[in-house]
Image 1 (spheres, rainbow, N blue to C red):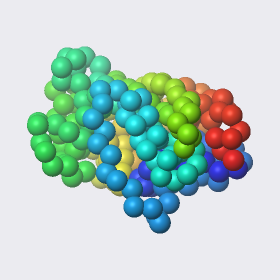
Image 2 (image 1 turned 60 degrees about the vertical axis):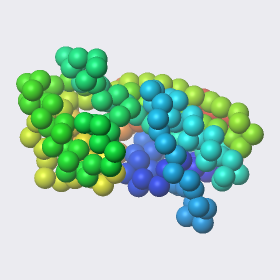
Image 3 (image 1 turned 180 degrees about the vertical axis):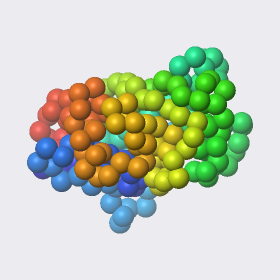
Length: 207
């Protein structure tokens, strides 16, 4: 059985692989032989952005595709200052910030809130068929953010350099593959929520 993830971001593909390690699935990103358009993720919710991507990708690929988008929220940060779905779009910048600029921006926010704060990622997941059938879910997973960044940066997921695991105290970006696999197998994590969603899908979404 095959699962196609609507992304070429290897960090996101690896996240699915860690979460679904116990499943008998071939997990792959978007095929390289198709010229995919740039999709503007311009909705206010992660689910709307995921739905938009999965519908477009499923039609182009010719098989079901699962897309994931996320939004970021910090405890005690005023609503109008919350990153939400605009994690990479801040200070009215028209260009795409580098990973280092992204880390520096959020480091300053975390410092202003007390150097070590609670937050959460809200995930929107949508599976779409080429005919437009949809299966969707939304969930939140709590995270701890710190103002001192790790020196190790994960390409595609730079803010893992500002997140620590509540159980081990280790930076997310510094986890070994085994540690990441173990993390995503825990109850309440992104991994457990992804497994619940994949289990709920009809078989033809994975065939």
